[in-house]
Length: 340
Image 1 (spheres, helix red, strand yellow):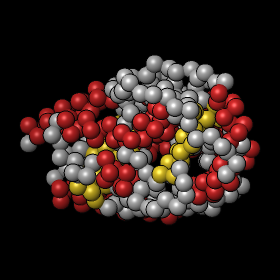
Image 2 (cartoon, rainbow, N blue to C red; image 1 turned 135 degrees about the horizontal axis):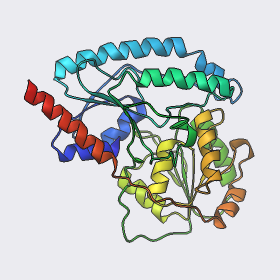
Image 3 (cartoon, helix red, strand yellow; image 1 turned 135 degrees about the vertical axis):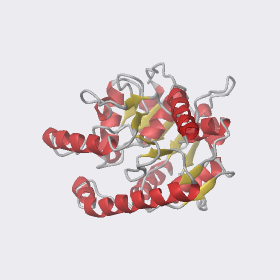
Image 4 (tube, rainbow, N blue to C red; image 1 turned 90 degrees about the horizontal axis):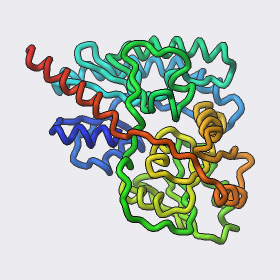
């Protein structure tokens, strides 16, 4: 959402951000001038175990449905209270209104269940029906699903579904920077997986004698070990990635778009049991954009050996295409205001 907020601010739009947890802390760091609201929390729970993760998430569906309903009611109240003209939702299914344009952004039109292709087909059809409740669905990828593969386009897309190009807060790369012989590790994701992964890395890095930095993805918390940084704002993180010889991180879609924007050489380690990340890591590895390694087989020494001889394919991507759709949304809002 960072590039979208930046662009909206160029039009002097008044922006309210509804966010919780680490997302809120990150956006508050980037945009301290904005007003923040606290929406209902999804609070998806992970047990930290690969086996049964998908079924564990499925078991939370009834509770999530209740949260989405509460969120929808909360949004309608906010629309009335603050005289909202339009809504842009980042994967929040209740974050829409019946009276103003409501757009949802997601690269997962056709999610992977990890169970079977038949279940995937059912999930896809149900998911599209949910997404069609919005005024439009914006897919942050290039036409042809260059980055997200079957996740965003597994068959013909309905009307109102648009590829808006990838989104990254690092869309403009500085012309001068110095690549250093350093490994950068960027941690992210929900607990307890994030901490389990961090602990495993720290044990291996105790015997790794080359320069490295870990960005922990914990804004607002203290760092308790050398070479660790809790959180970096966009400009500082961009500098770290550009100066690193190689990057190791999770296979989250935001991380993938950021790495490609900076043309970084990287190895993706998907969160065990997260079918989206496992699919993305394997798909992008098959396209020679990144290397990948399973967490249970991970070795920092082996990873660096592979990265040293790896030359990634770097597709040409338009990181500013989304502005076309923002312009259209603003025009639509202005037309409604004239009608009033």
